[in-house]
Image (cartoon, rainbow, N blue to C red; front, side, top):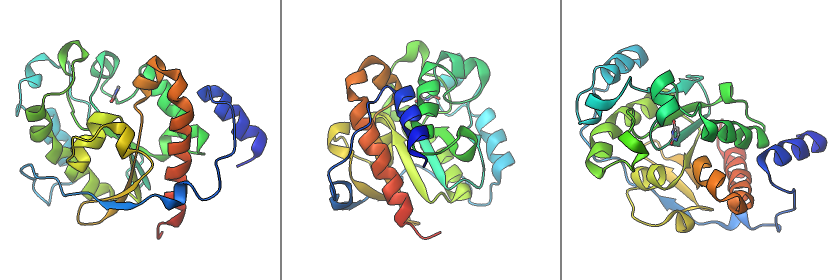
Length: 230
Ligand code: URA
């Protein structure tokens, strides 16, 4: 990427550009992620059937409080899949993931590694908003994960970026804190899709001092992507 443009993106992210020590990111150990264990959605379901299935879902109590489901958005042939936690108030109103303040920061984070929002696919672990922006309950995640799993099977991404603890822990089936999960390359599911973890943009809005670490993670993700077969 053009260095001046890169500097501009980093400034938009609120990160002062600096140079990562040579070799650091590429030393990260590969860890194999376990496959999702929730009941699967039928393997023959296409994008539109899946979207309808999600829109009609009553698998958990969130169906009673949602305005609408938030399926996912982006290029259905994208190499990159970004996975967040759950819709917030703005997403619940508009039916699209990451359209509030956190979404604006996510867009800047993606731009910092040369990706426009329309070039990636964005989805959440939960398709419905937890009321009052509480954390998703484990049972809600278990019920909803098969939809994401089917999205992943349809999309066949070359790389997945899990943003935040909830996305990372649910995809990797772990209780480890995010600080222990970042800066490593995992492999997701039977297709062994490379998966990298970083901070949630809503967390970064509250804790801007960690934006520098998020920038390290984004660069690491870009390195992992550069190594995948395409
Ligand atoms: N936070 C998320 O994790 N997802 C959204 O869609 C919005 C905010």
